Image (cartoon, rainbow, N blue to C red; front, side, top):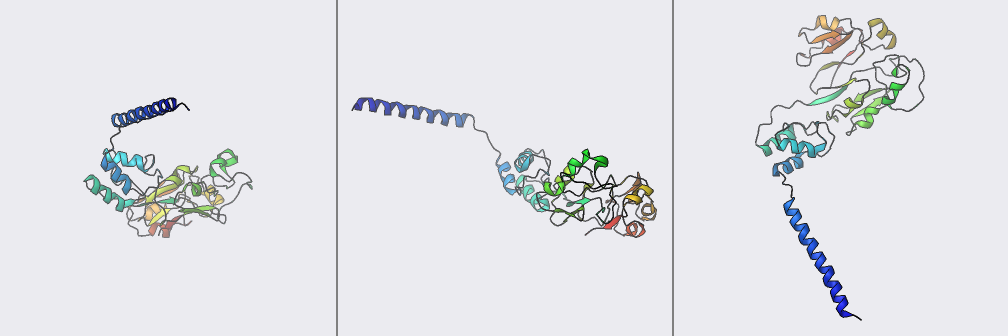
Length: 266
């Protein structure tokens, strides 16, 4: 047995290993990326859902932006006021006011209230229905398609399709905006959680057309606008909207609406 050869091989391998170790150690020091300790603390304070509702690619992206003062400390819609105040303490700033938001579906056109132009058999994905006649089987071209693309997109199980129309669980909703982004009809919006009333219709068709298509659709009659004591209601393109900053929650608009298109929340 050639012990000298074995010893040489062991020495060579050991030498290579030592060189690689030293090289990697030096490289780690030289190319080390300094991380702001506040960024790590902010990331730890965030809920970790990585929903993107803040507008950044996940919680890590938001934490980095907050640490660089490029995003407000209360930018996380999931964490809300509690997390905002905690992060404000880390950053040494005031948290400021935080308004809790929730998703709202501007449609009541369920299977009992709407008419159908035809029976649809195909992929049950709302986004795919833009390729079929009239954008879906429902006569109203503005209403909820009811195939649950929003349900699939919601990371908090806060929205479900009931009798052909999406409904939001206000308590479970974190206002991440995923449902808003995915809805091809653009009828899901974010409104203040404390809002008292909202218009549950997005139709811009003239009154006679809307009445033919849906028994709960806004017909643009303007009775809500004319009777609102706070001047919080406006009607554009045959569709009413409520300015939540002006709304006093009196409920007159809902009482006067002949089609019950305005609903009470909560």
